Each structure stands twice: as C-alpha cells, then as structure tokens.
Image (cartoon, rainbow, N blue to C red; front, side, top):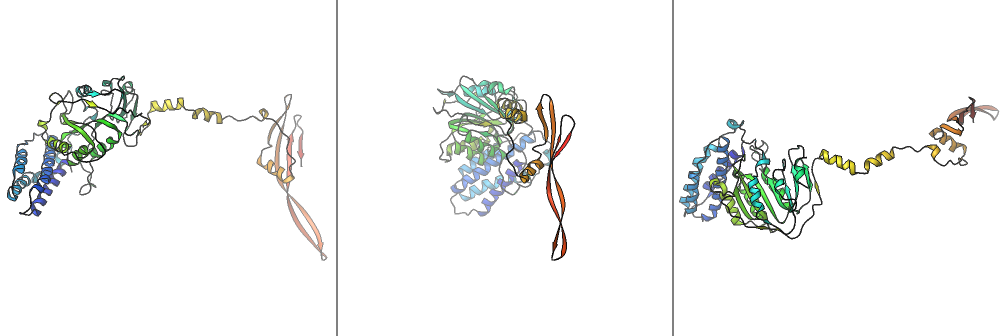
Length: 440
C-alpha cells in the first residue's frame, strides 16, 4: 500500500470515529485541533497521490472545509464539516496502489535537491567571528561544499552513493562514505548541517496495521545530535511529507524556523527547505512553529528565497573540535593512507625474521639427567647442522627409542620372568668425513 493512501484511509477512519463517539453537549473546541490534524494530513496525502498520478489537485474544497471548521460554533456545524470530508475522501482511501506501481516519481536524486542559489543566499546571513564546522550529509560530487569559503568554514561531507570520493575531497577536510547509520561522528559539534530526507512510497506488509515509523522522521531525529549550540539545520523534504509527527519533531528541536520553497534549474519543485537553529533542551513544542509547518500543505502559499526575508544567524562563540569522523564503510583511499602511516605492517614484517643460531651466544648444556636429555632430544631442539668452522659441518639427529630387557628371578623355587621396558637415548652424528656415530 502506498503511504499516501494509508494516510488518507487512516485519517478518514479517525474522523469517522470522532463522528460516532462525539456527544452533542461537548465543547467542540476540544475537537477542533483533532480535526485540523486530520484535514491537513489528508491534504498532504491527496497531493502526494495526485503527483504520483501526474494530476493536479485542487485545494479549494479542502480550504473551504478548514475555514468552515474554524468558524463552526456548535455540534451540528462541526459534524457537518467532518461528514463532508468523510464523504469526499473515503472512496480514495479504498483504492490500491497497483495502478501506479510502475511510477518513476520516486526515482529522484536527493543529492540535487538543495540549490546553489539557496546556499549562496544563506551564506549572506551566516555571521560568526570564528570558523564554523559544516557537515553536508550527502555531498555527492561536492556541488554544495565548494560554495563554502575554506577560510571561514571547516567542511566535512558524507557520500551515500559509494562513488569515487576524489572530487568532493577537493572541497572538504574529510569525506566519508555510505550512510549515517554505523558512522562514528562527533556529537554537538557542527554549526551548519545540511540534510536530505530519504523516504519510501510504500509501506511494507508487516507495518500495515502496526506501528508506522517514517524513514524521514528517523533520519531527522538522528541529525539533531550533531548540531552545536545554536547550530543551523538546512533540511530538504517533499512538502507533502510534513505530517504531524515531522512537524512536532521540528517544533521541539528547532527555533527561528522558516519553510522555503525549492526553486532552481533541474530541481524537484515539490521540495521545501526547513531552516532553523537548534533549540534549547527543554523539548517543549513551539506552537507557532508547529502551526506554520502544518499550513505548508498549501504549497502555493510557501515563499521562495526571492520573496522571503532572512535575519542574520549568529552562532555560539565556543568552537567544538571534530574529534571523530569515520564512515560506516572504509574508503579505499583512506585505507591506503592508514596502511602508509601505520606501524602495524612494519611490525608484521619484523616478526617474520628468524634468528640465526650462529648469531646468538652459544652456551653449553646444563648437567641434565637422562630423562631431561630425552625430552630435549624428542623435542627436536638439538637436531640440525652444526658449523665447526673452516667449512666443516656435522649433522646431529637425536631420538629416544624403547628398549626391552628380560629380568629373571627365582621366587620360592619358581623362576619368574619379567619384561622391563625403558627409554633408550641416542644421539646420531654424521661427521664431515662421512663417519656415522651413535652416542647412547
């Protein structure tokens, strides 16, 4: 099932429950906020569905119902509004996604959703008396990173396409590859962070009817921890994915938030940029920010960089060093540098060297007993070629063999015979003149 279809179906179902359970004598103001949430989410779901089908969605009906909901004074007027919404959008919620399963709408390049004009405009309003740390979470070929002056910014990047990193490395202190998940990166350290919302068009079968966790929400939640105090987040996301849970997350964690419509050559016009600074840790929802984000369902009302006013963004005077910046996958070029600068390889080669016997100081054997000599011989420690000097050598091979002897004794007039087995120690020597000697 498409997520947009799920949203419409779920929100219509919740409106029907409100209609069935609401009592005539209740204060309808307590129910208005619930209805607004359903109306806005339905609007976003319908627009996503229309875009997938290549259709234009007329918001006039929904805008009219939002107005009527706001003006409703009693139970009857409230019920009439939500009944009209149910009748209008319930049929869509029953449709399936089969007819658009082959749509290529979701085949987008998230590396191209931030325009250079937008970043240039933002740079005019980024003010600091120190170098700022910048993190582009999908730097692609470095189109955005190259806009940051290296005299004013320490730029870092992550490339999720696993392509060659030589190009983006030209514009950054360090570039890592693969995904944020599994990467090890310093927290509370970046002053400017650029993020791109990943999202999926369909729900997997095991999530339908269960807990729905949006991919873009998980990703957004993971970005906040990287921001320094007063850090600026620039987050690209399709406007039709600004559902309640996304809006709550932003309103809790960011301040001075703006929603900017994406414009530019070769850009997906359905994207918006969420721009805001890291808020204090109180985690309270800013109602003004939440309301503004919810009204972004009306895409035509969102400003572009050309008709939006910006105030200067000021940052903390405390610079946090980037002590950790490692990707979840090791870069081949990085591996080369690691081996080159590491002492491990030299240590490995050093351990392969064998000490020659003639290079060591020779000491005579200690006065071992026969059993100890036998152990030494069986271990093979004495085996080898011995240099006598003047190109004379002899070969030594030691061994221990079993020796069997017969022991006869007369006990009470009876002859008893016992077999006694003992170890026989031999040292075999082949002398330079060809003589073979055995010492036992």
